[in-house]
Amino acid sequence: MAKILDGKAVAARVRREIAADVEKLKAQGKNPCLAVVLVGENPASKVYVNNKKKGCAEVGIKSLEYLLPEETTEEELLSLVDKLNADDEVNGILVQLPLPKQISEQKVIERISPEKDVDCFHPYSAGKLFTGSPRFLPCTPAGIMELIRESGVEVAGKTCVVVGRSNIVGKPMAMLLMGANGTVTIAHSRTQDLKAVCKTADILVVAIGKAKFITADYVKEGAVVIDVGMDRDENGKLCGDVDFASVEPVCGAITPVPGGVGPMTITMLLKNTLRAVQD
Ligand code: GUN
Image 1 (cartoon, rainbow, N blue to C red):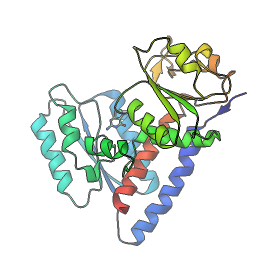
Image 2: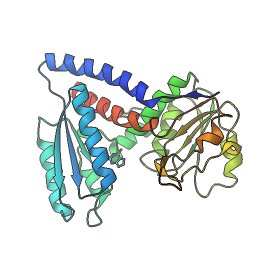
Image 3: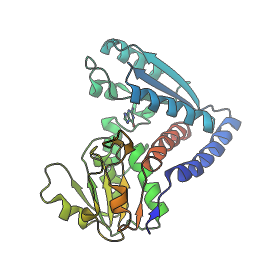
Image 4: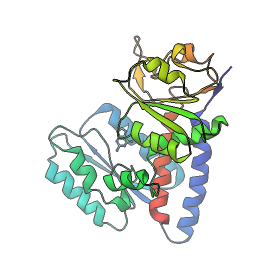
C-alpha cells in the first residue's frame, strides 16, 4: 500500500506556522498584504483567486482584490501594476494567469517589482532561483518539495524525473530538486520512450495536463509519485495526470487529486507573502 501524501493536512500544518509568524509581525506593527488582480471572467481563475483570498484570511494576511473587465487594455493593467509597485502597504502582487489575448503576459510579469513577485515568475526571480540564491520560491514546486519531505524519502542522490517543461512548474521544479542534490531529468512531449525514462525515477513529478496519462507501466516499484494535473476524466470528474488506481499499488507514495499538490500551492504563496515582509 502506497503512502497517500495528504496535501490538505500538510497545508493546514504549514498554514498554522504561517499564522503564528503573521501574529509576530503584527506585534511589530507590520501588516502583511497581498494584492490579487483578476482580469476577465475565466471560471477556473475566479475559483483560484477566491481560494487565494480565503487562504490569506485564514492566516491573517490582508488581501486586496482587483477585478478588471475582460476588455481591459495592456496599458490599464500595467498602470495598475505600477500603482501597486509604488504602494508601501502592498507587500506582494499576484496577477492571475491566463490574461485576455490583448495583454502580453510576459510584459505584465516583467512589470511587477521583483521585491513583490510572490509568484516567482519575474525573470529576475527565475534567475535568482537558477543561480541558487532565491528570495521567493516558485509556489507549486515549493509545495511539492514539502510533500516529498512528507514521504520520508531523501532527495539527495535520487533519480528524479519531471514530466513537463513549463515555466511555472516543470523548469523551476527541476531547479529545486537539483538544489536538493537530486539527479534530475526533464522529460516532455518530444521525449523518446517516455515510459522507460519515467521508470528510472525514484521521484516522479508529472505536470502535463493529460488526464490519467501515467499508468503503472511508467512507474518504478516504490517510487514517490507527484501529480500536478487538474484534469477531467471521461465522466467530467476531476482527476490528475496520473491514473491513481493503476499506479497506487506499485508506488511507495502518491499525491491524490484533488487534495494533493493543489492545497500546497496557495500555502506557498502565503509563505512568499510573509517572506516579502520579513526580508
Ligand atoms: N494561473 C495558474 N496558476 C497560477 C499561479 O500559480 N499564479 C498565477 N498568477 N496565475 C496562475
